[in-house]
Image (tube, rainbow, N blue to C red; front, side, top):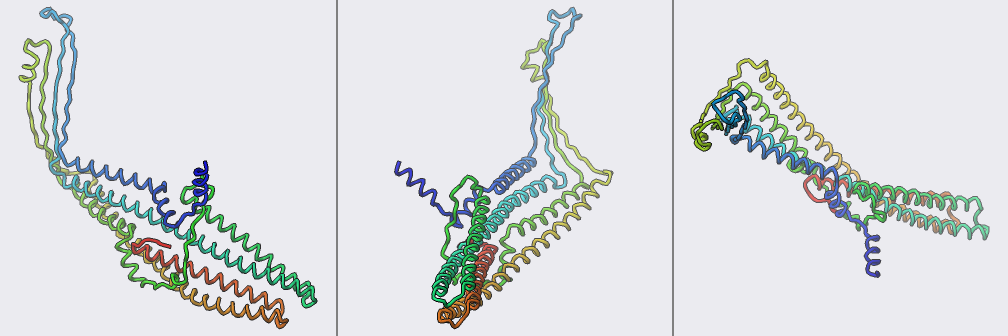
Length: 426
């Protein structure tokens, strides 16, 4: 019983790392599972198109019963007959349509695999962004708590000064208001953090998990100051790594094959067929096995179908295939442009926020030193309450700016690495 309680307690205290969130989402996400099913279906199409290159073989039989009521020559007026057929057919050549169908299905199967990777990438990006927001909000709350402690100390100091007549009650009320505002800010931030965690839990489909929480990794300023790769190098690598680009390239290849298939509509089709057949009849005096042997007939034929006037079907198919080819090329260009825009945005975010982080770090040091001096001067009666409160607000703003630029930089850096085929790590 005690061991069970320990296990349950450990489960209740579990905190999810980013890697655990990503791994769980990839394993359990419904959209990803559907993509995998589509990939399996595409593989079945490949198998079927391979089989279409081979001859077909079928067997058939027909059994009948007859009755001759006025045939006086036979004592048994009921008779039975049967026919037996084996048919084989093979499309020897149809302008390459069967082989092209196999190529198209293989490309579709490859695109289905790429679709799995696209979905996986989208899931990982979404969860990573949400996870980093949680990290930022968690640390921001801690900064707010520290600020609240300072506000409480200022309020306590103010009460003492009021008692000795060195501060008015109006000034003390301002300190009290600042402390209350700090408490409200923490409550509001904690509410936002809880909503973010709930959103992450929903993303993971952990709907019945009541004690969901995340493990907060130790992030350092050095992570935000890490070297940022050049935008062009990231883009060039991403062109060879991203599944959406490869899928668009396969669309272009598919359109080329579809054009060949359309042109094959002007070409003749050659088929080879063969039949083996026999029959039996119970009215015959010959034995059944001999009837099967005597009635055996074999035949083979070659068929050639040459399209002459097809109601413009082939011409229309060719024209539409060319339009589809142009469309797929434009789609590839669009995907490349979208990728460039995305990477450019991430790169600019990383560079700009890294500079903001450097500036904000210096600002925090400056504002902290300024506020410490303000406190000393306030305690000596050299600064008024407004100057003290303004200095504290400036320090808190600088700290929040530092945090925001820090985590935005880290997120952009991780996504840039991810677009180059790397693993997201925090």
